[in-house]
Image (cartoon, rainbow, N blue to C red; front, side):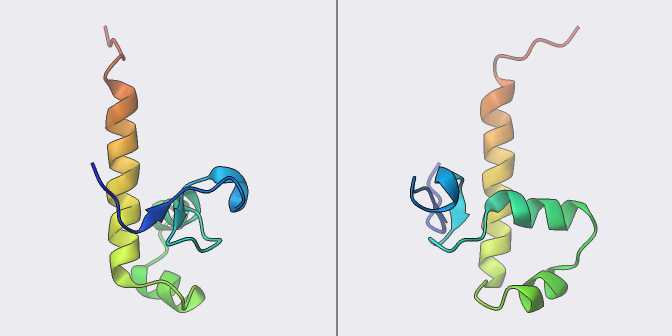
Length: 75
């Protein structure tokens, strides 16, 4: 799967997946959404973000979760 808005660089946030090379990690955004922060509040707190960035963060997190679950055996 291709994510145009998610970048990885060892020199930015230790290589964690970030949004468009900014110092805002996917984990930060997914964590905010999971804790109940609204999209509007996140976009106000991070004015460099765009609504599509939030969508791609969620899609990326879901993709990573699926990638890791393939080897999982549930009894």
